[in-house]
Amino acid sequence: MYVETRVPLKEVMSVNPTTIEAEATVAKAAAHMCRDEVGSCIVLSGNVPIGIVSEQDMNCKIVARDLKPSSVSIRDIMSTPLITIEADKTVRDAAHMMIKHRVRRLPVVENGKVLGMVTVRDLLGVANELNEIMSDLIVINREENYDAMGVCDRCGKMSDDLTPVDAAMLCKECREEERLR
Image 1 (cartoon, rainbow, N blue to C red):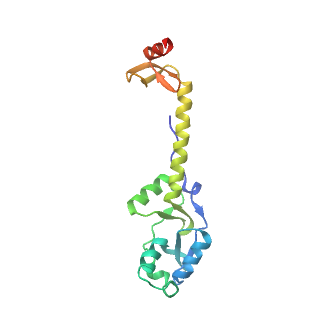
Image 2: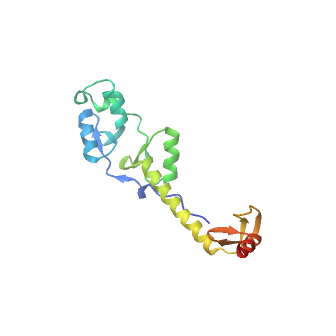
Image 3: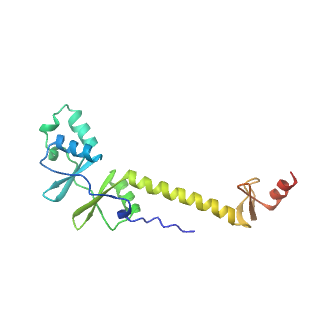
C-alpha cells in the first residue's frame, strides 16, 4: 500500500507571516510578535526579505545582555542569511532543509516574495495526522484481510494462513487452540 507523503508546503504553511523592517527596534518586533502570537518575524529591507529574528535572538542577544529593546535595531540581532524554501516544494523537502541548516522556521517564497512560513510544529502536525491515518488503515486491513501471510501474534511462527481473532492475527494451529478453550 502506498500513501502520498509529499504534501505541498502550501497545504501546511501559515500565510501572511509577521514581518518587520530592518531599522525597527527590537521592542517594536516583540510587540508585533505578541500581537500575532508568533515566535519570529521576517526582517525586510524595503520589500526584500533579508533575515529573521526569533524569540531566542531576543532572549540571547538582548535580555541576557541586559540591553534596552527600544534602543537596539532589529538589523543588529537578526539571523542571516535568511534560509528560505520555494512554495512549490513539499513537507519532505522542508524537513530535509530544516535538518541541513539546523533551523526551526522556513519562510516560504515565490519569485523572491514571502508567501508564508512553515515551522517544525507544522511538519509534526502533518506527521501525526499521517500516523493516525496509517494506524486506522492497518486496523481496517487486519479486520478485512483473511488468510494473510506473516508472523502469528501468539506463537511467533511464520504462516501463510493468518486470520484475525480478537484483534490478533493467528495461524491455523493457534486458532484451533483458541477454539478449544
